[in-house]
Length: 113
Length: 113
Image 1 (cartoon, chains in turn cyan, yellow):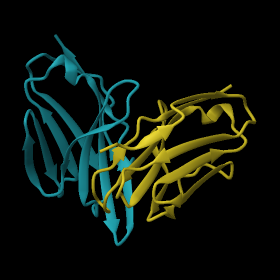
Image 2 (image 1 turned 90 degrees about the vertical axis):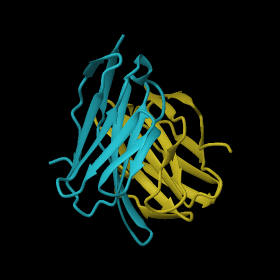
Image 3 (image 1 turned 60 degrees about the vertical axis):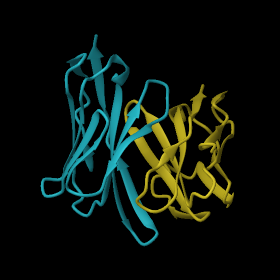
Image 4 (image 1 turned 180 degrees about the vertical axis):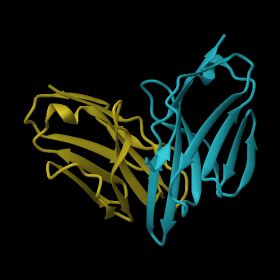
C-alpha cells in the first residue's frame, strides 16, 4: 500500500463545474496536510493546507479532512481552464525536530472550455 | 522576499561526470529539503536538513549522491559519477518550522547522456 494515494487521472471536468480531487494516506499519526498545484514544467506551489478535521475554504478552493477515514480532498468550484494542472497531496508527520513529508503521485486535472 | 533559489536551471552532462546542484533557501527557514521528480516515481525526498544538520538521508539512492549544507543560506547536492538514470528534475525546498508549508524552488533539470 502506498503511503499517500491519489488517482492519477486525468480528471476531466467542464468549465464552471466542481472538480473533486481525493487523497488517502496510510499513517494515522499524520498531522498536517497540503495540496499543491503543479503546472507542466513548473515547480509545485501551495494551494491549501489543513490541520484539523472538517472543511477549510479559501476562495474557490475547499479542503476537507477526515482523519478517522484517513482521507483528504480538494474541491475546486467554478473550475477554469487555468486550473488545468497536476494536483499533489502531501502528508506530514512530525515529532520534535523530525518530520516525514510524503507526497502522492498527483492527479492530473483537465478543465474543458 | 525571494523564494528558494536553485542553480543551474538546466544541465546536460555526460555519463561519469560530476554534477553539483546548488540551493539557497528562503531566509529564516530552518528546514531544507532535496527532492527528485520523475514521471515514473513522482516526487521523492532525498534528504533534509534542520539547522544545517542532515536529519534524514534515507532517500539518497546510493553512495554516488551526497548533500551538504555548510551554512543556513546554502546547500549542494552532488552526484559523482552521474548516470543516465539520474536524469530528473531536482527540487530544493525549505520550510520555516516543522510541520509547516514547504516552499519549492524552480528546480534543476538534469539530463545525463
